[in-house]
Length: 482
Ligand code: BYC
Image (cartoon, rainbow, N blue to C red):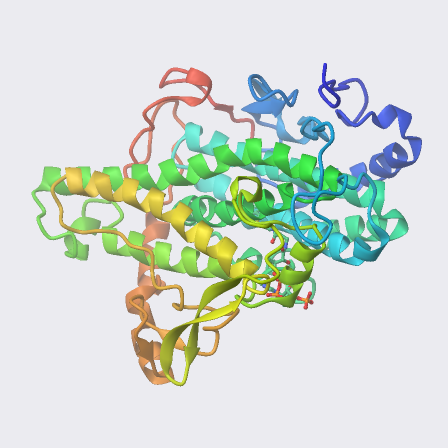
């Protein structure tokens, strides 16, 4: 078997990093473990810790068969440490060390940078579990409930993945960071999570689907960029995390699609011709398309902030150092050093949007964000096909990148979703047109009633086309024990 394919399942922490031979790290992780379980019980899914959930657990890193499905109580989930197999002879793929052997240890000069990136990545994982902890109480079906919990336990595993790197490669500093990861809390006024979007609420299931579509997709992009890293343990860790991440985006993509499907189906059945007749659509107990658009506006704009500033010295330094690459760096055809290259950056200068060429190294956050926007658009196109097929000439669309931004070039202006600049007063008067307001929230909340009968779905969402693990429609995905 290639290096890293053997998983040891015997100890407390399943792993393919030979923890048994690394007593120091094993002890450190075993010491961290009780605090993690306490955190999970305090901040993980509320009310379902005793229930049996039909979950997949990673049992290998072979792309052809890496997971098994079974009923598990969540606190007993096997959170393992799994790295994708080592690639023999791997070299640093970009930056000023390009072509040198990939690092197996942390290079001293980049220690602080690496520690920060790993900590930021690690912080998002428990944050999302905290944000989603109340959703179980209002799940639209057992199928959806199970998917929520699958996402949650895997975010927990991703936290483990980063904590392993911190303990293994960063000594005492790493141990302290690992403790802090369990101490911060999403939305807490004194000890918040590190990045903006991870302190926002996920109050309902439409938000959950939008979050997994938009924000987990930032996760995908950032993990892709870190998977290119010249620091090989980080690269291998992220490569395996991406295997799991695909399901999270499926949950969001198919979740929104099922909401749209149900809405247009109900509208058609009732003979409603105007998708903007919100009162008529809401009278059917489904979510009107304009409100779906508003939720998209919110989650897309919050997630764009996660890419950082468009022009960033941090990003330039991380690339130059060979630590964080571009999306699919290995598929790009250029010199992979970008010293002389430029990249067009959309800026707001003297009251106008202008595209300015900027040194490509400084524009790497924007470049990743542009790749992200393209990736988002493919999902939106699929949702629109459902609307088009139903015969409605309403189209969902991503808002302008300057809309509702708190970080970067556009953080000091207000715009509408088309990118027309608004004064502060206009923004205050009109923001309810673009973002969910109290009435929207109240309406969506009124729909959030749990459905726990096998094979049944809440009236505002269509059933999925196929079950998880090919299970039949009436499969009991969660055996609820209150
Ligand atoms: N909120 O030079 P800049 C996921 C800070 S999601 C608060 O532009 P940089 C997941 C920034 O930290 C993916 N602060 O920053 C999804 C910096 O602070 P310092 C998570 C922000 O470093 C769903 C300062 O502003 N992974 O996995 O180029 C569920 C200057 O900014 C924000 C990563 O993000 C913000 N939004 O870019 C579960 C990858 N933006 O250092 C999981 C690792 C910027 O001056 N992180 N700042 O004190 C990174 O690569 C970078 O840290 C960022 C920021 C892309 C986030």
